[in-house]
Length: 144
Image (cartoon, rainbow, N blue to C red; front, side, top):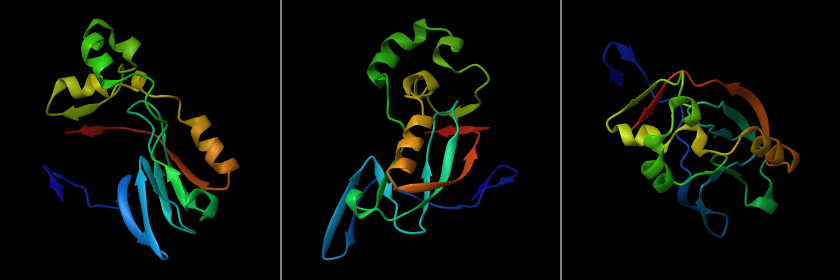
């Protein structure tokens, strides 16, 4: 795909709300992604926190799955109602580059809306779900 003068080919697509045939049946993942043995896994931080590239370890106790992210600490409704009253610093948006069609989406997805990602990654590594390959710092966020 081409965005203006920047070429941005799709590198990897990892759905986090999906039903897939696996083994003798089907596995539905809601807010989780497949993490089969040696499968690439991406667990996203927020616009202001790192994301992680990992490799799945295929833990059958967890249906060969990993989380999609850290989860929200504040609801979209709360942020859409109160977010405009908070400063960019309070929302964690200072220094965050975000391209969006609707400004309210930027506030709803502010870094302050999310739990810290590092403990989530650590817990999944300790549980034998994934192994860390790389930590990636966000430089730009596209939000529809």
